[in-house]
Length: 204
Image 1 (spheres, rainbow, N blue to C red):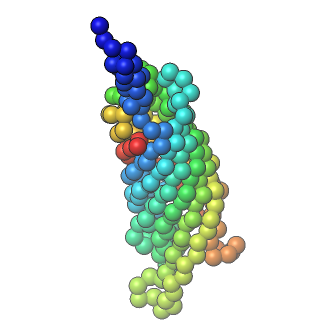
Image 2: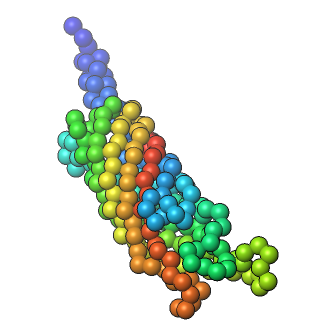
Image 3: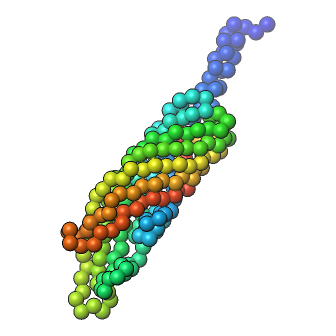
């Protein structure tokens, strides 16, 4: 017959095992960003670093706050449509804050898969550089920047490979009004920042 101390220790170990199997609610994400729509005309692929905080909402639903730092490098200089002289390029960086609902297909488990929907806001800074064509008789090189905020709507799919590691693919629609550079008399630039991302998510 087991001793009381041994039996108590076994009970404590059995109670601790489910807790040990649970991952931390805090995590990090690293993603590759592929711009789409208007953004694909202006930017190359970039990257994002995300901080996640998860909250269990039910047997198959999690909520997730996220803070994102993003960057989209500009494409090479090119000539705007209809321009007689000059070429331009732009690049963007941003900070985003949002909330996702993770809808697990077979409970919150690893391995397992889920769909997600999310809403949030993104604060962008776009730097716009314009310069004259090579060999121009009136050379110039000017830089301007603008800050603006866009609403973001996200859908995606994820796979939780282990309790600490997962993969996600997400598409985010993020647009604003046209942006003005170099004063009111200059051209307006379409502000499309929709993008698709593929990334890894780590939970501590």
